[in-house]
Image (cartoon, rainbow, N blue to C red):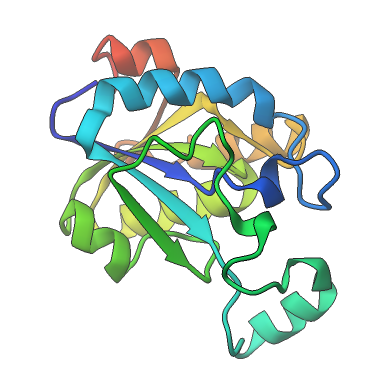
Length: 184
C-alpha cells in the first residue's frame, strides 16, 4: 500500500452487516478479512466512517427516512454500531448523515487532496457516492474491489462498472494489488 494513502473503511456497521437488517449486504462476511489486511498495512492511516440519520432531516432526507423508518434511530442505537470484526481498526471515526463520506469531516483527517483507498459497504450507495465526490474534489481514489460489499452481487458489479469509467481519478484494484503497491 502506498505510504501516502489513507484507508477509508466505509460504514462497517451492524445495519449493513446483519443479514436480518433490511439494508444487510449478503456480501459483507466476505470483506472482513480483506479489510483487516488493508487496515494492518495502513496502520494509523485508517479511517472508519459511519452513516447516522440526521437529527432533523431536511429535503429528500425526510422522505428517505420515512421510507426506511427502521433506520431512523438515535445515535447510540445498536444498528449504528461498528461490527465487532472492524470496530478496532480506526484511529479516526467519522460519522455523517450522508451517503457520501467525503466532506469537511473526512477532509479534516486526510487533507484536501489525499490518496484514498476505499473499502466497505455498500458499493452501490455509500462507496460510489464517496468515490465520486472525493474525485471531484481532487482526491486520488483506489476502490478495492474485493473489500467492498454491495447490496447484491449484481449491484456491486454495476457500481464497479460505473467507477471504472473515471480513470485516472478513480481506479479499481484488488486487496493483493493494493498491498503489493500495484495500484494508484
